[in-house]
Length: 476
Length: 154
Image (cartoon, rainbow over all chains, first blue to last red; front, side):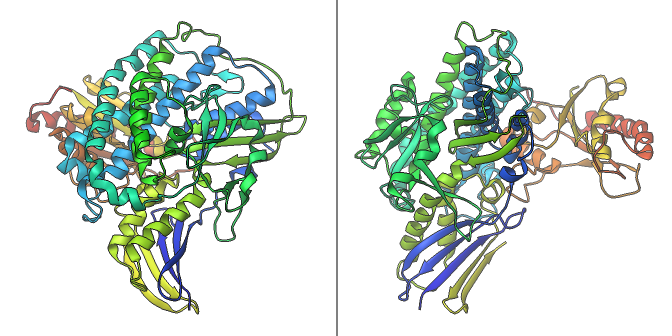
């Protein structure tokens, strides 16, 4: 008789996601599925709107990474206009994208995940949060708040506000950077750099203590995908796509993001609103690939800034090709923060960064356009089709969290196998904590369900093949 | 004496914008006030708050008779939930104390609203309550001086 364990996180916005762990007749974990039960509907209700509105509408998808949607959307509209974005505007978009990466990664590492590391996976959930962290490790909590503030200040300086800035527009950006704004951002870089280096140093010192998590938190061979520059360097805004395998060998390279549909298929499952993209040549579900910080460091031949390149070389020692454990998403986030800080400085010191030529004006010249960028959690695609009048007839959004869906399923199964083992029909608190932490390593953008960590109410049910309740645990 | 006033609310949801309306013109009564307009309180605000001599939170209330002004001193407390984008004023004060060693004296001034639908205009009774809300803010801010410890410079 096969059995199911259902972990149903219910957050303050009810019904975001749940996890089902399938057991075999003898109580061994066979599989796990991560379901998203929240329906958003952006792709459908944007139909009929003008494509020019999309950079205003789509950032509302998320309050954590609105800049990613803003940029991917603006780039899709650039393609519909068929314009060349002025060089200054292109660099300013890159700066904002990196600023968002810093603030989002800081949120993930310091606010959401470091309580697990510093207070312990099995510490009191009521204390396992940034407030508990502030009580016991105020220096770390302060670093997290300040690093996130740096990224948010940068976004506000460029875009006028921290969340949902109306700044990137079809053909460029709405406003140039002022000298005062540039100097303000530059003035924050030394402290941000200190925090990034201090945190990386701490992480590497304590990595030895985290071997169990590294071994079982989604540690398996897979493909990885991310943007790279023309010569294979790390790129977050204007690159081409590269796939590498578990050996770190390039499988496909320099794919134009506009051709994403040729390489990436999108499977749907009846029990989840989250799509499951896959690498088409391998089919579904064998075409599992991972995106995000870990994938970006695995696909990049180099970072391109001195401190980050040194860290990348050290990071690579964790694997015999690609670094495979999803637990190392945390480490990769820290390396990316360092890179972003160095790269922001380079971009702001570009001689024409204050140019007022920041927007190319055009009418609609094409009936379709794809925009892509690296969001903090992975590659994001916006794909629009429009009628001659400019109204949208089709919208397809391929979100980073979706692209990690298959990998998250496998990670949960691996964690469950390790912590349930052959124990069968019992659900222990330790399993909940580690499944929660394992998912969090991917930093999935189910904002509320994953941000309410530690206090995440969970209902866990063990159900037999005939629907009978075998075990039930709740955490509220 | 440096007073920080967090003017909270959404200016396009009618009476929800009353906190911002109270803040406008508050400097006539409190020349030393520094207004920060926010839609939500964030952990980043804790550091700025910890360096102030006193903090005012200006907001709308969904309870009470429309136009009713309530003003009270509030103090720090640990967060009841770990949702960092749903911080309460008392929790932000708690975070300031935990992170920066100091929670300044603080007060909450609310005006009960009637209409929270789309719109930029305040209800008549809410508009009429603005002078009283500002006056209560001034009274409480002047009381800070009697209770405040030394502010820290960040």
